[in-house]
Amino acid sequence: MAQSKNRDPAIAGGGETATPYPASRGWIGFAALSGGVAVIAGAFAAHGLDPQAEAAEIGWLRTGSLYEALHALAMLMVASLATMGLLGSRLGGGAQWAFTIGNICFPTALYGLALHGPRWLGAVAPIGGMAFIIGWIALSAGTIMRPEH
Image (cartoon, rainbow, N blue to C red; front, side, top):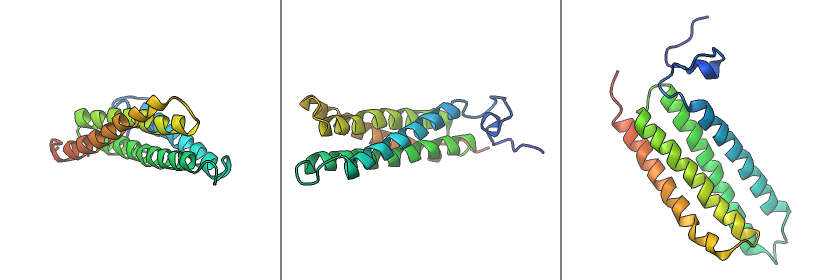
């Protein structure tokens, strides 16, 4: 069975790492973990808090969960596009790092606020939001500026 030259052999089980985007397995692993955390936060928002007494906390958890889940999917998309050779590796890597920083800062700040952590966490959320925006810009630029094969 011949492998496509655009497929990541490490993902396909070939054991090789000759790929246009060698870090894709790590990014996929982080995206999967991030997606799982998003589900946990969403479930806690739906079932773990009193809807009347903790409405603000539920809102923070839901917002954090939604953004984390969406950007976990974005990270999977970037890894897939880069592995297929449809995204420049430099800007693709920049998008991955930006989405990772965003997926750490933004939802973590909101989860911390929901769980009555320090109020300064509110200042961390905009850093994550800006990282998300930078990630989307890098993704756009990486597809537009990708050298043609």
